Image 1 (tube, rainbow over the protein chains, first blue to last red):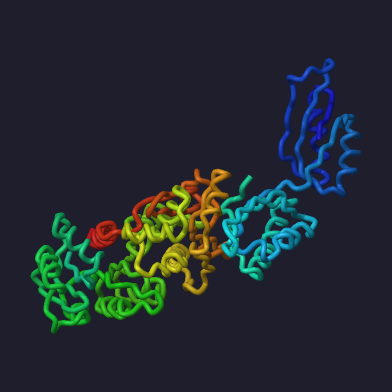
Image 2: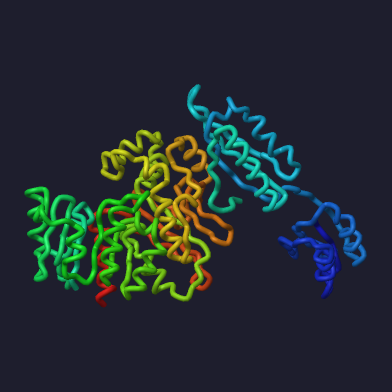
Length: 163
Length: 322
């Protein structure tokens, strides 16, 4: 979210405090001093993680501090991982494999790149999954592992989180 | 120091060659190959043994057995380098037990007995006041056991990651670099002498898993067995999969991973950033240890080869005598 506040000592802390009060997690605070502002107005961008339900409460609290909220942008799925699948992906209904993750509500397949060398030969696909958080990613991968076992697909997982 | 050597395959011959060429202070007083044996408390010339083996195909007297060398020869340490049997650990297991019960140190490159009977053999060595050393069982020349025992003493190791099979790493490197298919890369590995005629044990991940069991039991004093490892090999990998990984500056490697806190003990092909220190080329091996004080430490080196394995054996032997 992008905030506008008076450039006086203590104002930034006052704007940030409600975030932790409602259990949000601050990821980044970007201080834009070089922007042309009217006199003593300071604008700040804050990247944070917060449950959607808590958002109205947070907005009220921040406004209560005399801070103006200019813009709120939402990116719900912040966590990303890429896996590679090898097997008879089309014959085992790739659409269904993707659906199994998309229908969870907490994770989605956001990119898919498939190579099909020849009929009857195993194809390889790179899929990018996004999820709300790390726990949900684990859940999504568990679902994928189950599907892969049923459909005889090999999953190659990343060693480290990829971003 | 006086040693008895069981086994005159590539590893045994590499050891004898180094003893012959270098002034290591190691004297061979007993030796056995699959067909014959020799015992001489005054020492046997390593050079003559190699020449005899080369000419006749066996090293000594066909009426003497390997077990007689273990039980009768006059030595400080038994060097057990017979072929490995991953399932039973035999016959090496019997030789090792016999030497330990005689109160002799044992140095081995044999994975079978160490993976199968780690706890009982350690206990047996302790009871008899001798040491069982097995640096050569994991990652050839890389001194990971010495590193754990000395350099990292006092550290808590939280996780271990490794590339422990040179054959698999060679195949994956070639598939990624040249766009070879799995079968082409395997064929090339055979021609280069990196892969056995029957590569199953390597490419299915079994060899890597055995080494992971040895590492993990050593680090955490555990009782893991080969059956506890979740294993996926590299034989189903496609060139496309490697290419897809490459698009994001990643590659695929067969990674052994042990993280006791998360109950992870697995061997599987994984997507890994090319800049990761574990990503080594060709037949090299690499091990990353995650520790509480030292942070991450990665060791890279040759995982196989007769002289390279002899390096690990000699390191163990000189550690005993030093």
